[in-house]
View 1 (cartoon, helix red, strand yellow):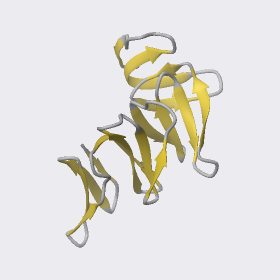
View 2 (view 1 turned 90 degrees about the horizontal axis):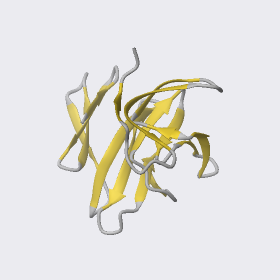
View 3 (view 1 turned 180 degrees about the vertical axis):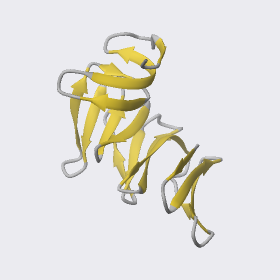
Length: 142
């Protein structure tokens, strides 16, 4: 997995996160919890946030601002939309970093958020409606 902004390239390889600074050719490795796998990555304010799963307990954590926040649900993916962290679980949730809580947004989930208003949502990837046990398949907007 790779994400790039104007100054950095973030790469996930072998369950390790690397930061490559384009101008200086410097590499930095982030420390990830032992017995964990990285499920998803996004950029918030040009810094990486990670969705990490403990492989022993299957518990999910959000790695943000060099801290691990425990999540009370199983999350499949994360995204950032208008400086808000979006969690994709059995439905879409908004993560409030100040209170460390979630707010339910829509009874539908996917992989990435393309656009959102109070009455509609446009998502990318595997689509799942709340209550369905399986994803209905890949969805790509026209």
